[in-house]
Length: 116
Image (tube, rainbow, N blue to C red; front, side):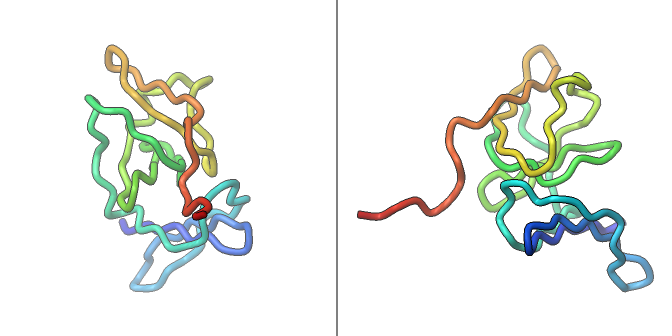
């Protein structure tokens, strides 16, 4: 099943490919996500030995999708406590401690910044 995420006009649109056509499955607020098209089906599992920092793109019943640099990584949703599960549209730093995923606010924002 192919899934993608469209972010535009302050909206986050999750789409699924059905019979070679993209159909909307969920629409909500984009939060701090940058506008663009994110191919969720190309995501790779996160390296549990390193901390990943980036925007949380999508959360479904199986995975937490996080943008890390120019790629998308997945974290098993069962690795998070239900209280500590990150919300889509937020910047988080995720690390693993004894097999459990811990999400904390990211120490920096992604972006171009100011050049002087």
